[in-house]
Amino acid sequence: MDKKLHLLDSFEAQGTDGARYQVMAYEHLLRLDVLADGQDHWESTGLSEYRLRSGERVDVAPDGAMRVASTGVALHPA
Image (cartoon, rainbow, N blue to C red):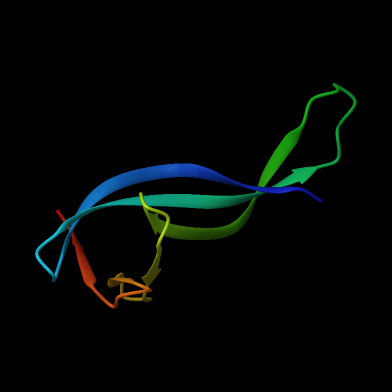
């Protein structure tokens, strides 16, 4: 089965390093078999991920705290 990411939202965040970041929120989609109408149909897997515009992964804790995975910089929505 094919998978793809679907952009849900983007927002600015302030890092503890003083820099501003653009955070992108994506949901994971899974392609269902082509139905009788001949078009692709996609369904959410229930998984989401956050990345910076540059592609770096952003980890989100259960309490909503965000941190850039590669640097440990904490992010706060602007």
